Amino acid sequence: MFAVTGITGQVGGAVAEHLLGTGKPVRAIVRNGERGEPWRERDCEIAIVPDASDASALAEAINGTRGVFLMNPPNYDPEPFPDTHRVAAALVEALEQSRPDRAVFLSTVGAQVERFNLLNNGGIIERALRECSVPTALLRPAWFLENAAWDVPAARQGRIESYLQPLDHSIDMVAVDDICRVTVELLGDTWDSLRIVELRGPAKVSGRDIADAFSRALGRTIEVSIVPRDSWEVRFRSQGMKNPEARIAMLDGFNQGWIVFQGDGAEQRTGSSSLDDVVGALVARP
View (spheres, rainbow, N blue to C red):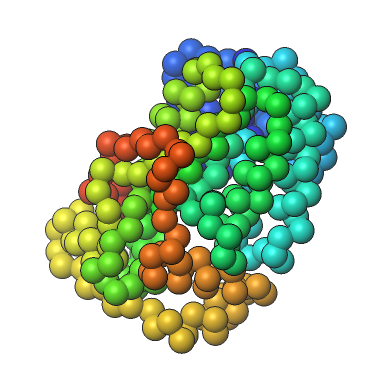
């Protein structure tokens, strides 16, 4: 039995699909029974954990499993970062109580970077898990190629905007399918100590590359323009963000080159899904 947190989201759901597709039983960890019903219909066990910082409930949910996929509940507008510290403590306590054979935590590229930014969330939980006696893999994927989903409506109108700049500045990106494939591989492995696994796609990607991929997928030229750096805070606050500083710092980190992979001391993996694969699939969605 493999337990999956975040199963109602993009990555957790895809991890569960990969596990089920290889014939492995899945226990879906959800906040309430209604959200778990689609997975119950797929013959998954259901465990309800309303609060991600409830160590006792989480320990019960993962008890008796061979492996568990862990995520920090997504929060792109956090107050830096009390909720993450509570979740980190709960994850370690739950693992020590339930003793699964192994755990894979979805972290992020740049989790090792101490400079303030949104990805500090991953680093906080990584540091807590380093003290856990359960064999744990810290999976650090690059920027998700699927983030281009936000650009689909604008691309259909002929122009997208980019926070990645200059437009020819490329960074590591990776597809969710590759993240899930590596997660399932790790859950099937056996190891005794902490592992750090960094995962990139087959090629780096720039803002201009994303526009070109949309051009190919839509069969017409898609223009791209940058979102001026001095407009970010006003724009993010107008969208409802209360704490945009962490997100702005993260974008600066990618653009300035200080959010990168650790390299030495980490395993390196490369996915096979291309930018065109992902953008083509996004455009083809109804």
